[in-house]
Image (cartoon, rainbow, N blue to C red; front, top):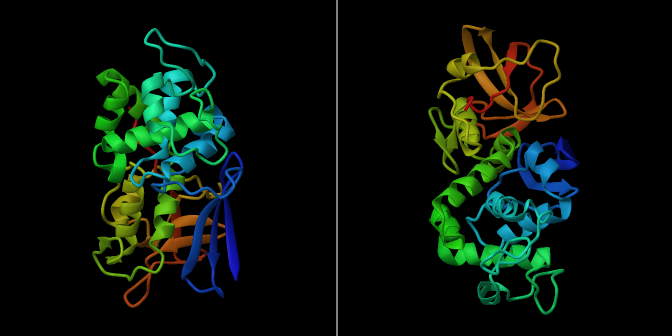
Length: 299
């Protein structure tokens, strides 16, 4: 059994366990400071999230979001930031809302059960665990389940369209694009190679996997490997590659024939060729051309 541990940031580690060196991944989990909590959407905390959100809050956002499939943990974190700066500005509002997630008493009573692991008993809106789980139940009951209507769920939480925009902006900032792309790609391991493929569970070619992984992270890339190489930005020669970087192969910079996503420890995730599956393998190929580090477009 082989484990690849890739440091994402702030002590968060992406762990991929491979059986007997094969390409089939049997475990893909987030570990480290978050105690192995999985995100509900595959998104991974960004550096701003790790810097702004207390670790106990972050762990609770992850765990609470997992109780509502389709609810991104980042939305809960965005509400926590918009309401009280992650509990740092806890107060009672003019409408009587209280605690880190700013619940009015009647609304909190509607969503405070069952008592979550580690929560106060009886539930208390000032207890971060109770408050965050109650917020997840509130959002889930009002459109977030299955990701059906996230903006509508946030609007129900606080009837103000500017509030919805603010929360979604925080949520976007709390996702780490490169780590999210890696997480997405890991989830596709074992999917058959298909030329022109771009569908989870059906088939991917190399550039289709790259495009889909970064689309999941909110970054648009061209469809074919040659265009992805030119999309850049390039990683300077000699600079250490990071998880999420794209590595390109071919006869020359104008004849790119393959692309993979860096996992770490000298390994990449790629869809190699007909008859194979999406897998993890070394990227020290003789026809290596260079690497790029996709980034969000400037605002």
